[in-house]
Image (cartoon, rainbow, N blue to C red; front, side, top):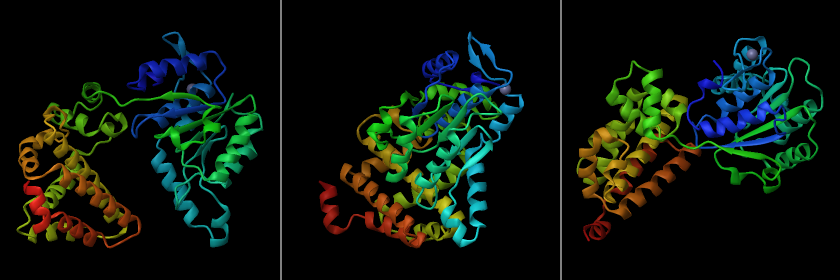
Length: 374
Ligand SMILES: [Zn+2]
């Protein structure tokens, strides 16, 4: 329990804890890093450390107990995805007129407010920032410091300007923590008022080591594979469902094989037919698209002769065979078509149709075949 539960990026963690120790945590902080790097986890840990009732030190630096009532209540929002779903479901039960004026916020502890992007556009909206402004100037009562965690950095313009006003005159007892995969998305005027921390992707070995202690039930060969597939994101490695990934990957392979070898469509149609619309079909299709991207990346890596960078290392032989049958241009065009399928999904085109179209569009026609053969 405590900061010892944060894995990787120890230097950044150390700097953050030093700031907590000086009792002058900045008013505005940006934590950037790839998806799954632990940005939200770290922000929650900071909120606990700033409000822990039994605050303690470890390694000479501030820590939190994880057991006092403040730590426990803040931890109730540790599972961001679940809390977000609950908030969205509660919003959906509102009357239409109320929906318009109600924005999604997560607040389980009175001093800690979590601001996720607001559906359906998934942007931070001005209504959310107004809620922050309404509460930020009131002194904390049940804790020492108010903490506002913005879980994404895609702000609507008006919302970003409203946030900027708070950052220009922040109360002494509040901190805003902005999480982002892409700090460039934030207004330069916001960035210049924040102290920035970056979490980087972890090395495969670090993730393997982590899995070895945290998930001893996973065999070492599988740990190796999960470490490669999580792309340095410890959060992804922690929750990686290898069985689900492999199911999606088998379908992705069917699509690619059909596209490359192009003689028999029956297995393709059987595969794409199992992708339906609706929420479940959407999740399944998204997983398929992710695995398709990772296979295409591996084909690219193989074509460039960097075998040791292949992520789907258990499929190396098969992928090597496929890579011989494809060209750089073909892989590039496959990635472009895939991006097209993704945007089609956002527009709710029939899923299995757009997947069929994807595979068929990649088949070398007589003209493109001529270019491929070169
Ligand atoms: Zn505590």
